[in-house]
Length: 73
Length: 186
Image (cartoon, rainbow over all chains, first blue to last red; front, side, top):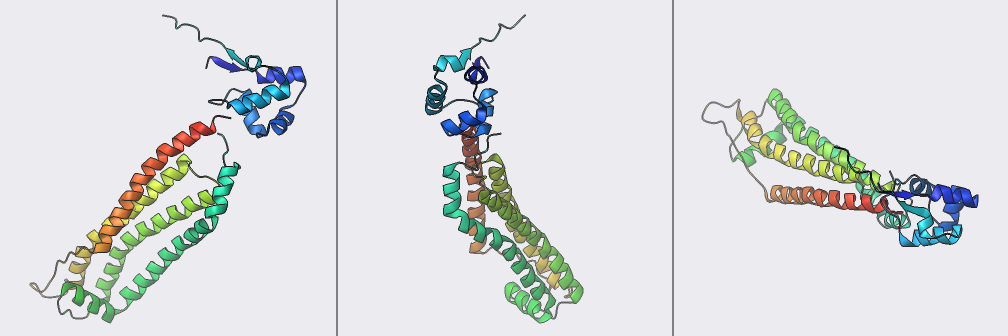
């Protein structure tokens, strides 16, 4: 998927553990892990807002667009 | 896979229908056992079998031999076995609901299996009736034997109900797929 979640990078920058983030934004640690690994189909605006508030960052710091390489013939 | 069982909406649903799930869960094996006891009592009573089949076939039957009653019991065990299977699926479905597995693909498939087992049971019961009429009169002289087939209003009601349940299972499956997609949004 071309959308890459860089939550783990931001967590490392803020020296925060997944468990603490999960507690502070009110979702399960399992869902934070799924989000970190990009194994989710989407993120709700209120979850994104809570993460940005806790980690003091912008949505663009958490989500990146990496276009798929064109298919080789 | 994302776990939805701990979600407040699922917990609220469980609190609302938990008692009903428990009742239905225990009613399912109780029903299967009840029917089995009635079948054993029916087929072990020679005069009752003779009276019942004389009434249904509108014929004067002499006492049905034990071997034919045993065969009749075994034929009756086929629809009963399918009913027991449906009851097993009912147990599984409501146990899943109690565990918070609502709108899951597994629950939708269990509902589908339940409807199919129920439909198979009703169909087997309908097919068993002419077989039983032949079995119960085969000891009579030629010309007095019967091939009886009858359908009761509750057969149609059962078929309509189970057909509806099968259709509902398909709708439920699509809803479960949508719910699974939605659960993958955090």
